[in-house]
Length: 567
Image (cartoon, rainbow, N blue to C red; front, top):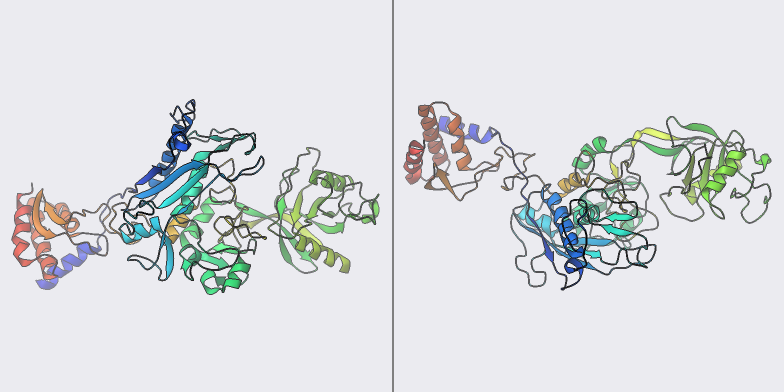
């Protein structure tokens, strides 16, 4: 009998319980602005885009709360997440500005529930994993988890002159407006875990310990994870454009359903195969597949063959340069990109490669507009341009400029999503964002693009999958067991004692490692069939639980009596 009862317990522990776990995070916006400013700005404002506020301050607060609700609906935590928020003057000029920032107020390591030892976690994530507030009532932080500061000067003369915040809760912003909710979703993600605490300029870890974000940072050039590197190697890796990827399984799995197939590349066919990164032009035809193949010719200006910039294509190109029917290689500088490409087109070129004149990467795109341009054009880095010129000096160089459909836009050839590691380093942007080559544009790229959907999850965005990789597992019933990785009882009864039919049996409601409690298991007996079968199941299960030490012998009768009285 003992073996049979133990088998019953094991069977009930192993059997999944149907149910739906709902997200259960609470995110609170804590207004720390002084009276009359920021969220308390009394300037009248007309409701816009679903935002009912009638003052600037009210609309700002409503937008913050809306963004918090979007994230709350996507995360699970048994601990309240508090965002200390304010609108204040931040760095600003007529053409550039800090829109805002958000980050974890505290970090924790080696706490109960941490997935990695000697590893820093953002406080909101650490609280979630620990199933407890690790810093309750800290007088220095008011127990807030994330600090969010946004620029109150945007829209004023001298601060991104001609632009303004859009406080609507939709994506109905004009081209000259910055969608606040979208920026908030981006910045809140940093505070929740989409960021590293390592110094990108020096490679040094925070007081010598890595962070959970860095656990999934992999450099394809060196073949090393960030934790395997020295400070000097981390410093070099942070300026290794389009060679560093996110190695987390959830993001890698999600990428094909989010990113489009095809990355623009310049492939060298001869003399030696190589792939060069390119920045596409905003004018002329889009880079296509299979692309354009041809020999490369270095363009020379007809009127300036020996001057200081003989290959910038700012004047008519010398026919002797031989660009007709070939792909013209020109240098950046002196004139606009459209001028260069139009001159190459007039000389008969079938495509144009613009070599940068300053070091760094990845290569930016080519800006400008000219509807008369009908050939594709791209930019390559200074280093790659010099490599092409050196090869040309030795003989023929044949290349293909096209869209490589085997590579997703924003990923490497192995399907791992690229992190943003430009050269030179950009503190505040490097490493803790997706690469700008991602398509469609992603919420967590270093710049906020105007076409974002205010989405944090599939099928449009990979932010939530990354947070899942660092530890934000789905846990709708807040039992500490991931709903998508082992929780056999979604929606668990987590009361302290076992309640049967409203009657407290006095039995401790033990939570098992599979996410089921004693109360959950007894509840399964309700599906045993007729009344007799239900009572028999409850009696046998109670005895089996007692045999395993989960129900005191003295409480067996209390459980069975409660079950018998339960209609």
